[in-house]
Length: 634
Ligand SMILES: [Zn+2]
Image (tube, rainbow, N blue to C red; front, side, top):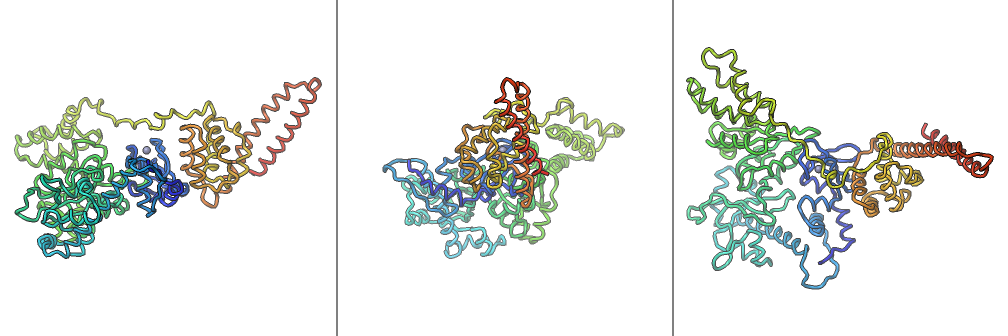
């Protein structure tokens, strides 16, 4: 198996900044002390416990315990082997990797990497090819017309990389074959399909939109039918599932939208490629669309991670549904599947059933912005649409509306939201004759009954136990009191993060000074890695520490310590480091004094004069030491 050279791995670690790589997937905000925080991509959470520490190029999640460096982040996030992760990072930072010599004919991760990187290359070349054809080829006239009828000029087409896939059966295939790609590669890229006789271009005579992953690479295309004689009936064709194109994880437009989604805490989900374009050009720069599939939980997870704002999830996801099915689609979204974030979900409905692209053509950019601005809560829209379908002027219509709406509202899992909508339903439908006094209560009661007994309403699912605890067992701190534990932690944190400042003062503290067995193990790892005094810190120091750690618990605690915030501003850090080191030293000296005094008391000076004198001498030295420590802390 080909091995990447160690110095190249080190260079990748150095050049691929963890904050840059993580930011491709997670919106990070400053969390003080140079740290960054975001919603963990490895477990579901509402408030961020995922920490990134650029100084040491490490991440750590306090919720689930995942942690590591930039390579392991990518490995875990993208399910890659170590080698694959290094290779992708190398591509990203433009580093040419060198491999150790190996026997020929061995296959392994390198092949996968080459495959991925080949598929990405093929897509990049295909996207350029299509895009060039759109502007230069006479055949693409129909495509250009299609775009201009929808209000997209050449500049817009270029901004979104729109292209034209020619009618001929193997124009792209030939072009890519000339560039050195094999048919097998093109088939596994999804660009070419295997025909009965020979491979042929998947997209023929269609307008194509390149689809990017979160990383910014083109991984597939969406293609629109242009000609009546197109033998493929489907209006839209997409790249089939491949090793790089997973439709449940892709959002068209995310590469243009993700920065503004994070900035504005708002994401707009539209239904088509042209709607994404129309929104962006109209100034709604947070628009995305799914690619040939319904919006699912995986898409929601991606958006939530991009949306996260401060400590509370405040982001809004606004769906635009067009046409007659809007109500149905809204109901599906509201009442099926994962309801946890439905409270932050809104809908923007164009009253005449126009989609954003049509609206922009008809009424201009401002009307698209207004459409999005007029969003309403999803539940409200879904219930109202259903109720309004009945004739509420007549008792029969009212009772039918109630019978439909009550079971629907009973499915809202958030109890207080459910009651609120029950009250609103009673208002929307209105009471029957002579029934007005208890009306509201009656409707709420019926909704509650439909939901099951009111006091057995489903509670929020408990957060899963942190994986770290499941996997490692709770770190064993013995019976040490919290205050001492806290101080030991503070001291180790500065030793891990600021070894040069902790310096000889820290190195003078023996492992026995740490009462927690876990922390003592960390102290020993620090000693084994050479101690603080000579260390510059940073990623190399962290690597040495992790290598010196004897077990997973110690490594886990080390990675926690590496990302925790030091409670001092830059100017205050040296003083802080000195003070915690002095304090622990003093605590440790005091503890030794107590036991020394006890031993002195047990020693008979006349019988064991020599021992007594030695202990007494030690006692004097220690007391002087403690006085000195106290003076330095004053
Ligand atoms: Zn986590």
